[in-house]
Length: 88
Image (cartoon, rainbow, N blue to C red; front, side, top):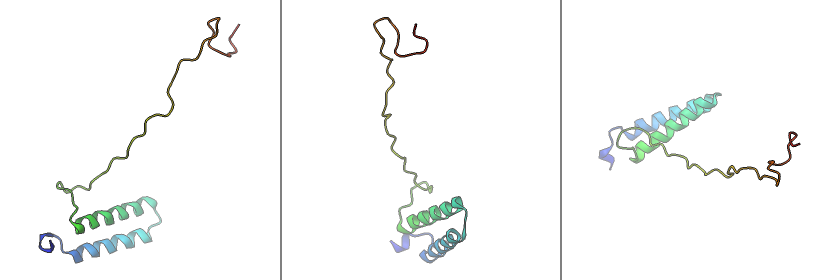
């Protein structure tokens, strides 16, 4: 597997260290997140988990179903739809 890598592992470690320094030295949260994402991608490359198209894999978050459903308000015997200031 060592011979399959196109980028030497030492070069990947150097870039990871640079990104880690950038993350530690930045006070901007978005820059920190970008540096950490770069480290994750570099780790994937080093481990050989790179997607075939070269783009980082994005895992979708599961969407939860709505908890409440809309129902029509109950109507009173006189046809009114409940307590309203317009009930006469």
